[in-house]
Every structure is written in C-alpha cells, then in structure tokens.
Amino acid sequence: MSEGRDVLGDSQQDTKQQVGVTNGIDHQRIEAAVREILTAVGEDPDREGLLETPARVARMYAEMFSGLHDEPRRHLGKLFTEKYDELVLVRDIAFNSICEHHLLPFMGHAHIGYIPNGRVLGLSKLARVVEVVSHKPQVQERMTEQIADLLEHDLGAKGVAVVIEASHTCMTIRGVRKPESVCVTSAIKGIFRDNVSSRAEVMSLINRKS
Ligand SMILES: [Zn+2]
Image (cartoon, rainbow, N blue to C red; front, side, top):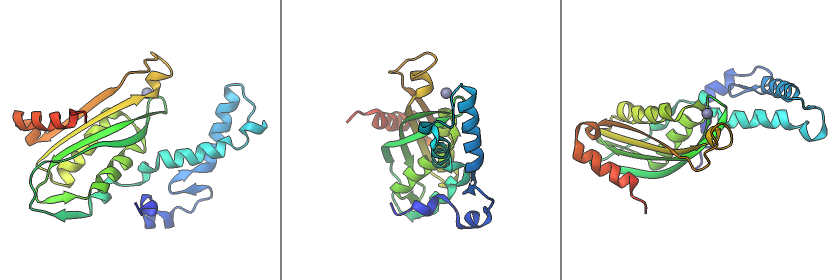
C-alpha cells in the first residue's frame, strides 16, 4: 500500500510543531517517563544497554498509538458504487493492539462480513480501518463494536458481522498465565441481527477453517 503518510492528516502535521511533539505524540515526555519507570524498578537508565531505550519506546508508542491521531472514517471515503448486494466477507485481517488495562499487546485476527447497500469498500480500506481502530489503548470488546458501528453507520451496510479472535499477553505472560487462551468477541448489526438464517450463514463462513 502506498499510504505511509496517510496516518497523519496534513493539517494536523502543520499545527503540531511543539518541541519533541510529532503527530500528536510527545516523544520527550515518553522518554522522561520511561527513564522514571526504569529508575523506579531499580534499574540504572544510564547504563549502556538502556541508553537508547527511552527513545526507542517513544518511537514504538508513536507507532502503536498512531490511531489516536487518525480518524477511521477517513478510510471509508473511497467507496465504489456497486449493484452488488450480497455478502462481502474478509477473513483473517491480522492486527495488533495494546490492552488499555496493562499496556501489553494483544494480537490476532479480525473477520468482517457485511451486506452492502449500494456502496462497497475497497478491501485494503477495510484492513486500514482495523489498523486505525487497533492502534490505540484498547479493549477487544470496544474495538469489535467500533468496527461494526463504522460499517453500519458510515458505510450504511445493511448487515454487519465482526468477529475478533485475539491472544492477550496480559493473560499469557502474567496474571493467570494461560498461554493457549484466545478471546473471541463478536458484534452483529442490521439484518444479521434480525434474521437468524443470514446470521447463521455469515457466522458459518467466518468460522469455516480453510
Ligand atoms: Zn490486559
């Protein structure tokens, strides 16, 4: 995709010119905070191996939280007008996000099915929407709802089914330590909610293991 610059609106880029702040992310402040955490856990932030760590973490957060400064609706702009009014289903859209309770990553796949209402979204835009919604402090349930809401309200889809399967490192590497656990969430809108057989059809297609 040739959309590297897409993450930042041009106007936003022009207005954010405070020192150390790029694209809404205050790198200097993150660096100071990371040094503080390292000191707080009993580390020496000035030892050689850690010298570059605060700056690296700041760049990582800028990437992982870029969705805070983007608007997923923007990616619904490029629509194709199509007579097609049957199911569009995209499975296995890989994503990674950061759980807002522990600031640890969770990652997995989103499966999205919708029935268009005269307007079809480019497939790469669907992946783009997932990326913007996931690149912020998140919870999986809200992320699932947000994607479904966007497709229902902004795309005007007649039916929407979003299923997300993810592994949460806050459950696998700490706390209850269940390394195999996968959390599945779903959001069902429109005809898929009202019509049992359409819902069964889309869910069976989403769940089919090819
Ligand atoms: Zn968590």
